[in-house]
Length: 527
Image 1 (cartoon, helix red, strand yellow):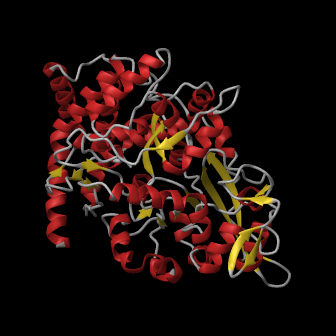
Image 2 (cartoon, one colour):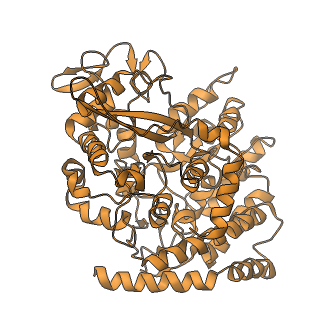
Image 3 (spheres, rainbow, N blue to C red):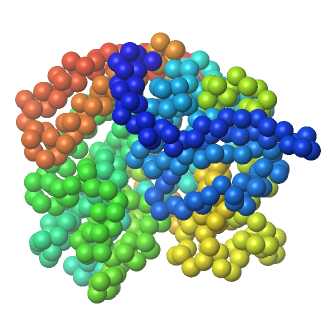
C-alpha cells in the first residue's frame, strides 16, 4: 500500500475506534465434548437497502451450518454506503475480518494486490466451477489479478438485461406521446411534459447518484459501467477507447445533459439524492422519467399511488435512446458474473484447516441443495415441494412480495446473494420481466452492447492503474458536477480543454498509454 493511503486510513481508524469495536473479532477453533470441531469466523457483510436480518445469532440458518459444517459466523453487517470505507479501515489497522462479502471487483483486486486477501484454489470448489460450464476459464481470467490469483469468488449474473428507461405511461398517454428513440426526440418529449407540469421534475434521479446518468452514457455510445471500467471497445467499429470520459462522445453527452439541466428538464439533485428521497418524490407525484431496473415498475406504482394520488402507471420503455441513430443504439447486457461473492483474509489463508472448512461450506452453497436452502429456507416450514418444484409456504414471503408474513432471509439470516438463486424463484421475482425486456430490445434493429474484455496487467501495471484511476476519478467527478450545473460549459472549447488539461496534469496521458499497452498485449495473448 502506498504511504499516503496508509496514513489516511490509519487517521480514519483513530477516529473510528468505537466502530471497530463492533466487529467483535472472534477467530477461534474449539472442540466440544464429543470431539466435534467448531470453526468461528468474523464476517463483514455489505447490506442492501430494505433487507432484513435477524438481530441475534441463534437462527435456524446458523444452527444448520454449525451442525452440517462445524462453522459459525460472527456478523458485522455494514450499510452499503459505509462498506468500502469501513472495510478499508479494518485492513489498514490489522483488524481484518476472516470473510468479507458484497464488494466491488476493484476493491477485491486492490486488496489482493496489497496482500490483505488470500488467493483461492478454486479447484477445491467443484460445485462452484460447475456453475459456469464453458464460461469458467473466461470468468476466472476476468476476475483474477495480474499475478494469476483469484482473490474472491464471483457469483452468477442470472440477468441478461435489467436496466432501462422507466416512465409515466399515464402522463404520456394523456399528452399523446411515445417514449423517444433519439436524443432530439427526448428533448422534445421532456419539453411537452414540462409544459403540462411546469413545477415538476421531469427526468429524476433514481436515488443512486452518478448511476442516474448512465442511461445518457449509453445514448452517446459509452458503457453504463464506464465510471468503473474507464476503457471500452466500440462494439461496432472495434476501436479501443482507453479513457472514454475524455472522448468526443463524452463531451457530446455532457452538452446534452447540460441542455436538459438549463431548460429545467433534469433533476437538479440528480448527483446527490438518496433512494429514500426519490421515493418521496414518487409519493409527491413529482417524477416522470428515470433510468432504473425493469422490475421496479410495481414498486414505483405502489409508492406513487398514495396520499390521494391515483392512476399513476409507471412502465418500462421497449427501446433505449440514442444520439446516433444511423450508427445504432446501445443497451446494457449484463456481464457473465457479478462481484457479490466472498473474499477471505490473508490471515485465514495461513490456516489451511480453517480455510478449507469454510470453502467446503461455500462449495455447498453452489450445489443444487445449497441453492434450494439459501433461497427457500427449510422444507416443510418456509416452503413445500409441489409437483417437484419449491413453493413458498403460506405465511412466508420472498423479496418480491409485499410484507405479508415471515420473510425468508430475515427469519433465517440466509445469505441472499451467495452464488445463484434457485432458478424458480429467480423467474418469479424478476426473470420474467427481464426476458420481456431482452425480447423487446432484440426486436429492434441495430442494437449493440459493450462486451467484457480480460485486461491482463502485470503487478506493477496494476498498482499504477489503481493510483492513476483514483486521481482521474476524483477530477472526473468534479467536472461532471460542473458541466451538469453550468459552472463549466461543455459547449465552450476553453472549458472543455481545461477539463482535459486538468486530467493530463494528474496522469491522463500515462493512463491512456498504460491501457493501450495492456490492451494490445492482452489481445495478442487471447487471440
